[in-house]
Image (spheres, rainbow, N blue to C red):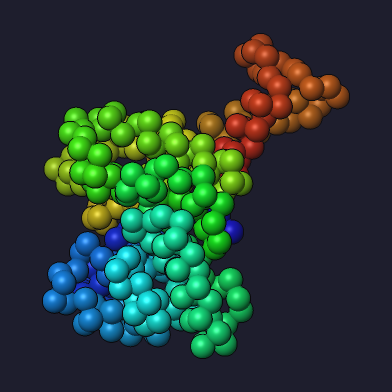
Length: 280
């Protein structure tokens, strides 16, 4: 199954939006119990998400962003068959282990296969950055994500428009994911909803070049742009196929592409990544 390109956040206390979000084109929905929900509404949001999951039709993957300080209550309520897994905010190794154990209990209680639910750790704390390799290697981890607003605040950073100040931390996430054999991570959300599509696409392509292969969205209109950026064009697919075929036909470890440039297994590996991301 192809990994999602886009994860659309949907407030957990808005059943009306959950009902329509599946038709917005995102590969995955994130039903949010954390930042999008006021403290006084946590309980009602939890119930609304559980009710939605109980009757959810087939469609995009359904994830739930839980609260780190309400982990047991959130997991017990939403860990049902329609739920792909949880996004774990402020992820650190000990919290990831707690989430794993809570999900084990939920699977047992609901008679589900062990390992049914996945986890996307969201690296948002200095400790999470320091232990990012341990997180990537942790139980149930499907892929990694990063929360740059929380991380910047915790580190005292004042990011500019291109958020270059956080580039070293994003790179750590990419390296840790590759070292642990996980899919490429999910890029941070774009919070500036005044951006036009061209600027959003340009900023997302920069994240693609950094090693990300998906991104979260906080508004449905961002979704088509993210899907387009993380989907190879027909020209990219044709070039990648040509590289793989030419190298396979050489009978050796090196060859030349159609432009006369040297190709080897490293180039072919990048080409196979393009082919693996061909979509619907």
